[in-house]
Image (cartoon, rainbow, N blue to C red):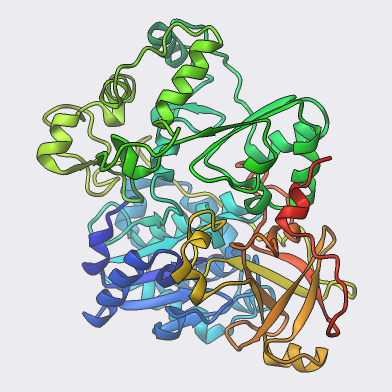
Length: 545
């Protein structure tokens, strides 16, 4: 996040796009609701009529994958009406003329054709966002999980820079992270092209700095992403895999392909706190420790680094994850994994990572938390980014064109599937499906269908249907609801007995290699009582011969 969570209650306008925060990020969603009660305006851009969308001042329901066209249309209106921030553009940005030329290719007639949004709605959203003193944008996977996900984010950055809604309190472009420490994992270099602090592996200076500490010559070529790893395993280019805290047999797109890739491996290690579906097919399972059994730090969505303190000893044979990884590394011949504590590892992080350079356990204890960048020991941490300048000096405005989804509906697969979370469960359900009270609230998967589509198909609420895509099929019950538009259906991805991701498309964003989870083409067929359906569950997908 460029800004901080508390600032949501200091802004004049919140634009939520591709996100369902009251269910997927309920703490942040609560802040948004309080902000609205205190007078902030709320724009929600989401094809579904979610809880937060129903409370918005403006709710836009665009066609799936049309966000770039919509944002370009809003920017054209802003330019035509003179609502852009000329001083900010002149002093803080570059590329304005090229952006202006591009958005002029998106008159509202074209925007309506691509997005399905009426002229007056686009204009109203543009005015509400642009004309407030402080407006902020919040987005999640509904923006990034597309083949044009990177360009979606760049479009939002264009909008923020065009209006000057960045670099001040209560403004910014804010991705809401999906797990408690996913920001920390990225910060530590859990990406194929960077080391900690987003220091690129292609830099010889960076490699030499880390190499001196790690006593190794580091490769200068970026690695491959998770989805590419499964492709490589399927093709025989990757022979072994070490999966830590992931459950790709539920969480990855095109699960049947993942199953085949895992089957092709010579050796699979899984390190986790539960015996997940992928752990069940591993050659070796290493029992890690939970958050309550370790010392360490988490870094949350707003770049806030906080201490984690051990409340109980690891249960059974579990060990802290860093100890397991260090033991494996030493067994493989490493001479540098001789850490004595989590604090010692954090000291190394601070020494090698400029944005964490001023942090220590002592400072985190006394300050309770710090937000990066925090480069020196006397630096207070950074509440919001880009106050006086962008990281490279000026912010670059990037002309972006609309690109349709990789898979569009047709006669065979006439509906478009949206995937997302339900408030009672979390990700692949490895933890929440073990909680009886949460399972009492929601114990099985479902498909949300618009009443008009249900009538055409001859189905009612609670009917069993077969949902099919070009990649697989499964059987679930229906929920008939106007929360989804005609032509759209929605499913969560939490359940192992009806794995939604057997349906989803593994087409990738060419830049980040993020899969297009958030739109694929499907069909629904009624299931007669007692009929057998080829339900490709996680347990079936995990059955290795």
